[in-house]
Length: 217
Image (cartoon, rainbow, N blue to C red; front, side, top):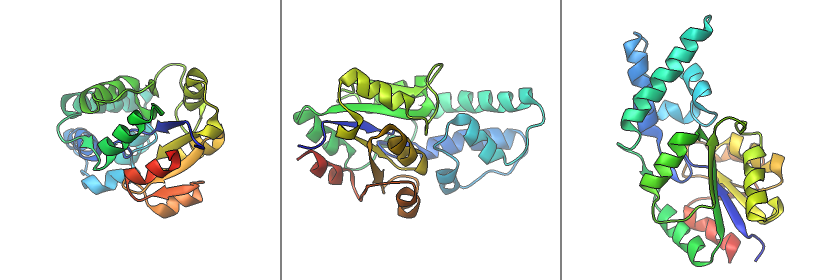
């Protein structure tokens, strides 16, 4: 067996979070008299943390730092009200997690989601599986594509990066994997197209979650 562990991205890889994120931001846009975006547009707004999401959705320069921070806090508040309304695991994800658990493969999550929301969503929506680490954005953990969080995971589980799959759905994920020396696999069921993943360093594209299982045969 070549690989001994897997690190997952969360949004767009394990969980389809798009609608809840979109509705949260659209609510804040509407409150400030700005045009809402279609849910599908958020595929290109998410992936780099909540600050980047707010900047992309509002599509404006925030002259005042306080104004920007207020928008970010408002989105956090709205998301806190509805983060589990529509979010669910993608088809095939439970089967992949079962497969990995049966073979005692180390599983972990490194996400650009705020840490508290990453932990909450996993505890509520993926309660039947054990993850050695769940790391989101928090003090001391720089956002992806900095691989620091993923390297911490590899160190904690004592598996070298080149023996670890990194599965994600965006260019940011593939860049994270490459920067840390992990094996980058692009999830085609997620938010971004194959071209973006390949251009950003994906070594393999997975059409469905169970395609990833072959790496652990």
